[in-house]
Length: 179
Image (cartoon, rainbow, N blue to C red; front, side, top):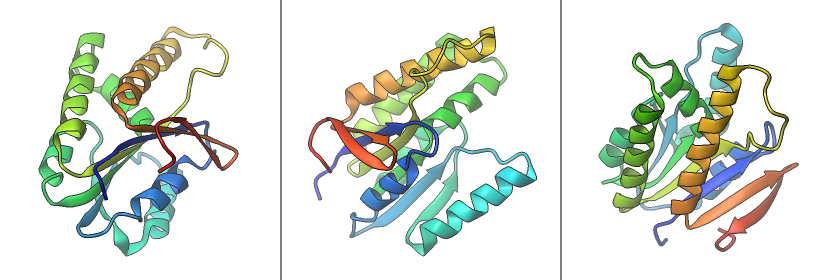
C-alpha cells in the first residue's frame, strides 16, 4: 500500500478509534504499531485501556507514548507498515501537564510531530476529537485546551492526505479519497 497520512476526527464515541483500527488492519507486510497517548490514572481508565487492548488483539504492538510521539514515530517508522496514534486529544492534554508547558513548547512538539509523520516511509493514522463544535468553555484552562487541540488538529489535517470525520459511526471524507 502507498504511504498515507490519515486523520480520523469526530466527537466522543463517534467511532473514530474503531474506524482507524479497521483502516490500520488493511496494512500488511510489517509491524502494525499502536501509539497510545493515554495515561491511565484511575481504575475506570485502566479498565477502559484493558478493553481497548483486547479489542485490538494481537495484530498490533502497543507502545505507551504520552508525550514524545515524534521520537517513537521516527524509531518505529523504519520497520512498521503502519503506525496508529490514538489520540491527539489526550496527547495535547499531556503536553499541557508537562513541566515548563507553554504555547511555544506545544508549537515545538507539533512541528516535530509534523516532521516525523511526513519523514517516515510507513503510513501514519492519527485519531483526534473534534472539540470546536461545542460552546465556548467557561474557564480559562478549558478554553486554552480547546484552542490548542484546534491548532493541533488544523496542523495535522493540513499535512494529511485524507481527513475522515466520524458522525454516529459513519465515516465522512472531508479531504482526499476514501481510504
